[in-house]
Image (tube, rainbow, N blue to C red):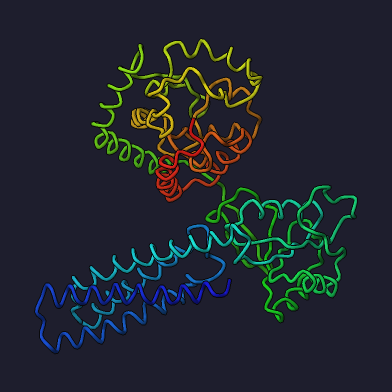
Length: 470
């Protein structure tokens, strides 16, 4: 794993040199015949700028192993370091009355930022491929109570791209009778003795220790363990019993030597709700205008494919439990709804959520293509513009599915259902009922406009790949 920061340092240097040298050549060689003195000055400035930019990326910890491989934090740090650098250049230029060529800066900044982000993404693909095969990951020994150890190990195993591979567990509370019967991670010790824990780390060859919930370690023991790990250059990770909470909601505050973790309450009200609605109106109106020729062509194909109307309006449950009619291009035969109960009964799923029929005979040939690439859902842009749906949100479901909700699942009705969502970019119809609900609840609990934008970008990839489409 240590070779990746070094690899990124080389990649960053090459990209920065490319961006700055390119801006220099375009601005002073191809566009403007600057004097020899000016060229020399900007040549020196370009060298200094490249070096400082490269250093800033390191100072901002954009190459830290903690942010590599998954999540948006790495990209945020690259963008933040670059923006701060050019902001400082603007301030210093104004303070010292030095007239920096705007065309030069205007070329170097966007080219450099875009180049860095693309290069980081490419390196991440290599890292992700290695992590899928169990390489380039931190080898973690999990420390804690029996059930907490099993939960954390299972969670890490499900997300190998995060870069944490549990290799062993050390149970600090409970007995062997409390351990799960089916476990992938071997138990290498019991108790709360620091020396025994260190011996377990050596035996498992772990380079990180994750202290999970239920460890019941005395603060003094945890402090001594931290000292011992620091001396061995082994990372210490605390994994509190917080699930489905995104990073922006978590804030730490040191109080009396204690690192208190504050979890902010998710609220999609007031300004946040207005911002999301403006985003929906702007996005849906723009897409309807741009896609109008495509919508017209699809409408003609649907009309010619089989008898019946072009659009299909189905009643769905919206925000707060209200009902609305969701528009889609008709992809089934005209009497499809009348056949649903019989088909569900024949496959033995009449009493289960997510009313899906396997190998559905009601779908028309044109409808099958529309569904594969989610083209049948484009008319939902009208729902978004009218306010009954959002571009991103929980999956819109039928009244029969909502009737099967438990108390936790009802929280997904706090926001408007979406054309796309975490369910769309995480497997679509391949997801189980429980997985779909979990993703929707995560979205509701951790909404942000940036998350909506990221989901929309991922939606295009999921749709064109057509994984999980029905």
